[in-house]
Image (cartoon, rainbow, N blue to C red; front, top):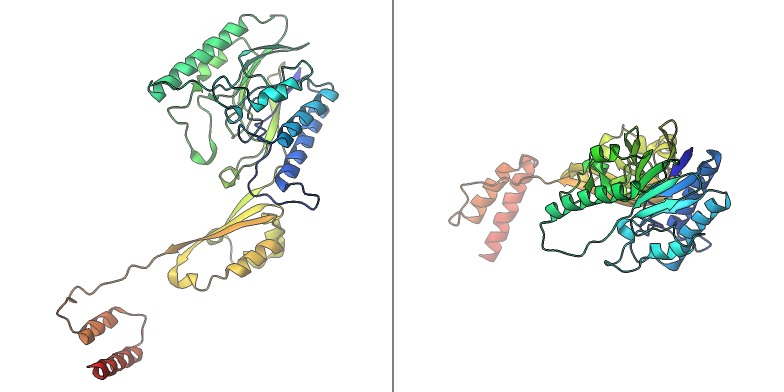
Length: 386
């Protein structure tokens, strides 16, 4: 039996967007393109279910159009005979005990429930049982945040064990949710905060399930096998901090314990560091198209104050656009500021001409002839006002 494990949907990011001719935000068009790809992957691999482990939206107050987009995706899968099970992520939640937009999505499900689960429990499908650990918002306490995170982690494992004790042993079971797993990799070298509840990998591997499918972490990764333990990653890149993360989904075979990563056609984010590019790259149209075509691009470079005078941002932008970039997000120079030398012997008793001569002596970039002319001109001005 195969299942599709989808990434965090975040339908849809508002940043780095343009409005199309038909009024559709480009970010929504990108999201729809990836949605079509995930439906195609589910159908081609003949999956028995599609699992969506949280963060349907960028925040807890999506527009009605965003809710309808997620519901449309789920409905398309259901029309193909693929049941959908989804749960709330941390981005989806309002305050403790308050209904969230995920509850609205749930009401649109065939059973009025399994598209958007917000409380731990079991979803019993024809051939599969799904134990769900959705993200929750705890009531604020005075407890130390790190201690509270550890307690939450243990409580989540206890809850998973409680529900797994009730599953039908004749059918396979998986655990899905929206929590970090110990040992997971984060984007750009980031690390989990001590206040982040983290499910211990050893405890997860000891559960009587065929797979553990978690959202929340945007770096797609298989952490363990037998059972398969994974983070599903991201649907579309949010910003340049995720440019090295490949959006995609996993097709997991519960019988063979194989997990295949299926890339999604998400828009690229590209950082061009001019210092690391071979000479004349900007003038190489073919190479520029390979680097930036259809991507959101930012340009960085590091240079001295003197060299910065010769950096033509207009020309750089022109070359980026000629390469077919979707958007130039900005050009960000890192200027190496020169340290101004100071003549220690100059003080309040030094005459203006002597101070000028000592300062000019430090200026190796000026010719002797120019220094003489500056001193002569200054002496003339001083005599005029004396």
